[in-house]
Image 1: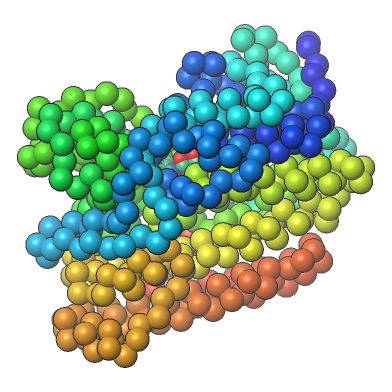
Image 2 (image 1 turned 60 degrees about the horizontal axis):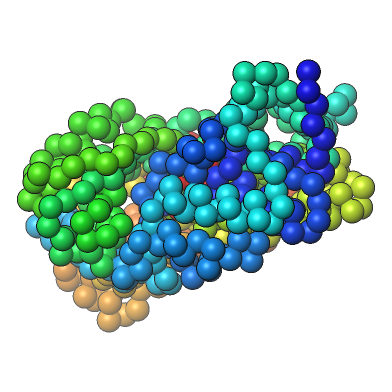
Length: 457
Ligand SMILES: Cc1cc2nc3c(=O)[nH]c(=O)nc-3n(C[C@H](O)[C@H](O)[C@H](O)COP(=O)(O)OP(=O)(O)OC[C@H]3O[C@@H](n4cnc5c(N)ncnc54)[C@H](O)[C@@H]3O)c2cc1C
């Protein structure tokens, strides 16, 4: 059997894997990216193609390298269609937005990591994780172009996406690594890229529409004014939806899509839960979807994956330089950086996700239609929202009939704020982790009690 040796071995040539590999290679270390797809198909990933924070990428693969894939930089707001209330809400989205050609973006990423000096092994499917008798991950086994092959590395970075096989194979019983992961914390999503005959009028907006379920939405994201990424998803703790048929039914009712041609179809699962409590184990770090670094209310995961890749790589380098890759406390800073940058916010946003799963879709849509748009935007992107007195009065008048739900939402917001502030105190090292989790679980108990939602953790 062939054995390869590297300082760092990354699984997955997605956003997280490419940023991790480019960062490691930039620092002069040997790094391989192992990808199950072939060189042509690599980078072709099921995605809505919407990029929030399009102005901001880690330096290892700069924005200028990715820009050729930005097909629409005119999008500047969300357009929420609420047929139940015969309403359309135009909601500003803070920060820079773009819609991209996802496959082209995937190729640009790989090119960026390749130019930095990372090696790519395509057609290579990881099948098992190697651990020594102390539990440290020392590499993995794969099938490369039909032949078994072993990879040994000081650090394995798992960028294998949602429901990563590596985590099923590894034994993390004695590690801090989060193993409380179940399918019900994921969303099943499907998208098509569709060419329409005439330009759409909403080519400057990300269009959202509720599905028949509370915990799901349909999207129409304009790559150009005639090429639209259309898709939908639902939380997997609900009865399965017929994603392909439901999308088809919606498109048939929209005049803009008459005579439209489908150019591409893909589906996948994505984590719609809080980030992993800890994404490190001796010799091992998980990044991007493999550690739930996704905004659980929007499903946006590209930005989190890019930064997680960078942070994990930086910590891997430090551990290699200290010769302490087996020590979780050396890798821990990676967890801290993730929580500090976006993890705390995503954990708080998950509270709204949990709230929504316990509500009827019509009640929620009625409420949504009556709330001030700017505050919704703030809530959606910051994990918290403030409602000033003037807006409170406006909301109170317009939302008559939804006051019970508003009160529940208000109580949920207080709990989301409490959770956010707890995540802001994420421990600096593993010694405070058990106590931090106990307190977090107590807040979650209150959240489930208040929302009446089924516990998902
Ligand atoms: C339908 C859908 C729509 C989405 N829309 C958006 C959106 O509009 N905007 C946004 O920001 N985010 C969106 N997301 C989320 C976003 O796509 C992910 O968060 C992001 O791609 C995560 O990057 P990643 O590198 O962690 O994982 P991925 O991009 O999933 O990459 C994982 C890679 O690992 C490889 N791999 C997996 N297992 C193995 C194995 N055993 N051996 C070797 N290789 C392996 C895979 O082939 C893949 O190339 C969407 C997700 C879905 C499913």
